Image 1 (spheres, rainbow, N blue to C red):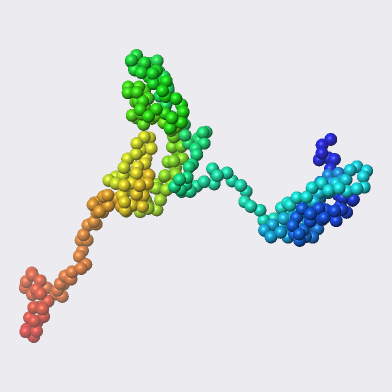
Image 2: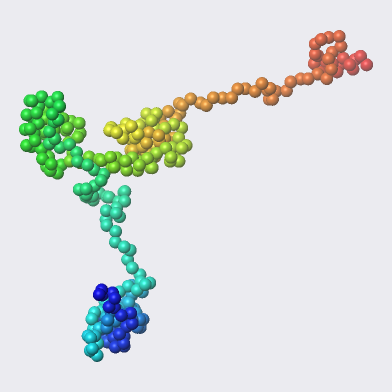
Length: 308
């Protein structure tokens, strides 16, 4: 039979009546004057009862002193089990503890701070250390293969600080050193994706600055191209007046500091109207007599006055 089925929901009568014993134990464990009124009892099991007392300690609002008493089977003497300070339903509690790795945010690291990287960090994967053997179909000659075997004795999968500084010339490790591949770990595909998403959100085509830009960064002379696969979508801004100066920007990003913003072709102008409404054209009241021409209005009026 389990312990849960043997527990009694009804508090033991003798244990429930031992309020004075529980209070004396709580006052002995606490500082003077901090044990308040009796606020209830809870049955912890057969002949085991916990008495709760209000805590008046400053800074422990809603906490309760809990004194547990018990008695043996067929015994009439109640004894003390334990006394402890416990939070109540409305107690003021500290926030739940969160590991530092989850609390850390970009920009929190300052001068002198060290940020250890977990060995199983999903953003990284093992790099080339010069210990891989060439494929059987590799065009590496026998002489180069011997140099590579000699280099294997010096290159070990240790920390980067313990790797040889100058690999033997002509070895596979020397070629990896030249190409920038001789690192203990490199970015994984997951690390590349989350970095691209982060840069795209900060300096991407959907930002308000890019929406109002005259042209994207891909055509800007201040853009410095990146190497590797991310260079197909990102670069570094080198315009000191741009809000993205020194930042990784999407090629589709843009700002008002575009190198060609002042010399970009003007938008096409609409054709001039056929009817010029800015000039007044004379219109005679009647044509001149015996003439196919249209005289000026003033001359026509003068002729009519002389004839009359």
